[in-house]
Amino acid sequence: MRIFVIAGEPSGDNLGAAVMAGLKELTGGQVTFEGVGGPAMEAEGLTSRFPMSELSVMGLAEILPKYFHLKRRIRECAEAVLADPPDLLLTIDSPDFCLRVAKLVKAKSDVRTVHYVAPTVWAWRPKRAVKMARVIDQVLALFPFEPPLMQAAGMECDFVGHPIATQPIATVEEVHDFRVQSGIGDAPVLLVLPGSRSGEVARLAPVFGPVLRDLRARHPELRFVLPAAAHVAPLVEELTRDWPTGLMILDPRDADPAEFARIKRAAFRAADLALAASGTVSLELAANDTPMVIAYDMAPLTRMIMQRMLITDTVTLVNLVSDTRVIPEFIGDDCDATKIAPALSAVLEDPTDQFEALDVTMDRLGRGGEAPGLRAARAILARL
Image (cartoon, rainbow, N blue to C red):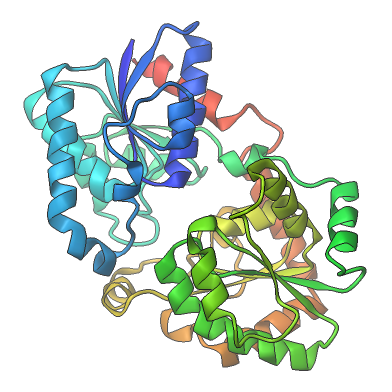
């Protein structure tokens, strides 16, 4: 079996690696891969046609300057599929890129197409599902509420669980060691998560700084910990210089990757509260039973368009999966330090309402079940 697979960003690379491993296990190794991916997929046997980092852009304002280059890469991928048709085209997230490849492929062939990660039609642009059904045969969904939406549009869809539900969390001993070695002791900890993209950090850091100053005045005993992604660590250092003293930045640049991952897991588990950018990080916090407040802003053009097209009253995944609205969120115009700080203070003083929602979320995402990569591989093979 030959599979052409495309992932466009690190999260997709991890999903791709897991499903590749699952397919190799279920087929007894009788599968080969080609396409585009990152280091995790390359470790599973993929030789990427070009660096995956070329596709890691987000938001309309960020995509526009790279439009023509991305368009060339779309055509290049489609032509590679059509020149030697595989048994399956598997695209992973990055819909602005991947679905355009699928469209070109379907226009000239009957290659079966599977897309891993359903588009967020529950949040905005619901008609995308109908349009997507013209070029995608099967969707692998991360969330249990997504299959009915995809099936209604005319696609096969399988809920395969979310990878966050099976990722390891820190032990009690690791949390204790982190608190001792970092000098935190028994003090309460606020985990600060301004995003993993430079644009996110640049927009959120000027808001998060005043939030921390307000919280330091309200709760002088509170300690701040910020795990930085390697590629934005220099920017984080620059933009946090005027933040309150005592901020601990966890910097992976000179650390052993496995050791840094262990420290980061311990920080997530040790935290009493988190201030986080919107996205899947809310699920990572839920897995660690860490209460949170979500804040996010976008480039002005992206924000204007999103505000007009948003069709849900929440974008926080924990709220959606648990079918509650207990996680406070401050998006776009509401991403304001004077609003965020009081909300954080209130949750710190009484997080009770959040704990049940966090537990329900993880159960619904597949905690304790089969690994999502293996479930995804099984779903692909079952429908071939």
